[in-house]
Image (cartoon, rainbow, N blue to C red; front, side, top):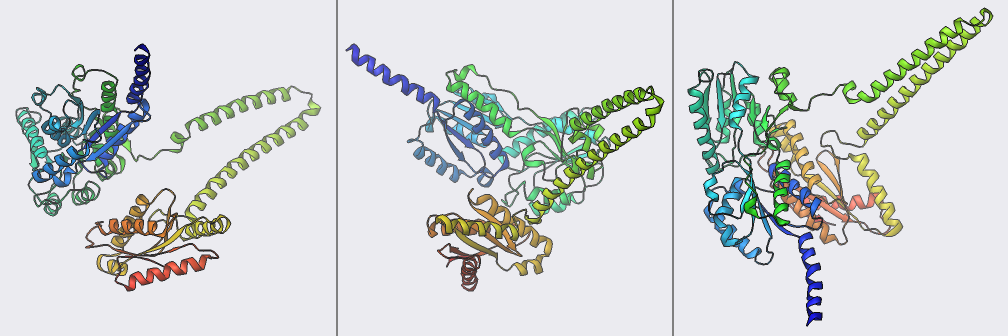
Length: 569
């Protein structure tokens, strides 16, 4: 009996250690995987988990609530999906990102994951009474910094008379407006602030909003709260729609969501960092996984908001940088040569000072020498100084030439419009793959991709829009190919893709996905963007010209058969 008990204990101890080092974590994001906020928060969760649990098992779900906000039918289907999926993969802890995932778990956690700890993050509108009967919930409020950003605007624009706050009419948008109403009541009773008119805009279409901001007069500013969709149900993209809004606006736009706004023509504001937010929430989850009771971990009141600004927008609106709060981070600010090479410059100056001291001492010593040797010594000293100076000058010139050579080499192999490798780079890569294929039979495939009706796009929308289409197609290709594949701009509206596939069907399937993703793109006002693709696989005795010729024949067939398709030779 004792022997059996010892065997059971020896079996259970390793299993317990494995469970602790291999926890199953479920992360539910409110939005989609390409939403910059969700991407950064998820990355923070992964980085923090890997520090403690190298073999963690993370399941990530995206509710896509920016597209399906307030859609009850979608929510019922989502409940059924999670119930079916996680009856097999039961999580040890659940994390949520942003308000909508948090509210979803408040409603469905007990039916889906009874008793499982929940750590929330990114909650802007938090009601502590909602957790009254939820002892297994804790986390970090993201909060909102509406009040702080309004005061920041008055600091940067002392003559501001009107601030327009942008939101929408989703549930989250309405709660934000409620906070604005409370702030407005405070400001109306404050003699120093009552001179400033606070207006909430939440009733608009995207097109109408772009037209409406054009009429804003001077002494006005805009504070972006949050927009998911307009009154027609159109999705608001911070990456595409926000720059268009800023372009239409004669006044600066401020905001509080750093990853979403900075770089999209917003001037800045008191902003938070979703990456740090995700890491801090994960620290709480790790503490729970290590045995700390959920109820002993209090909810944190608010995420950190710090001043972040875009230098180009500050410069455009001629904002005095001395008005920025202490510790402000300025993105895109030019760095002087001294700031970039401070240590090198200081060291060089110190060396020069020391050398000058040595030279001075030598000169005094030479002066005291015998008169007969004076001229000879002075000549030698002058010659040494000249050689040293010339040597330093040659070293500096050599370094400058090396830097210039690297820059020229990069420019020679890079397409300046899309940032992809150019035809020269593609030719070099293809020749190298042909040589490897001849040496060891390494398989690879060549695909030529051509934007359909590209001349028509240029003629209809103008060459700037055509350039934007080229850049957008190049970005989709760069972001969605595998690590071993390479994409180049082959010329005009044509791209070259080199792929490593064991079977031609595998490459064709990947190309079909790329074609489908490009079809779903939206660039400016272009109605529809499609591509035709021709592909050919490497064969014995293939040359540079022969394999490209076959791919080109396949591309011609795709064009001839109606475009927007993939044809393999």
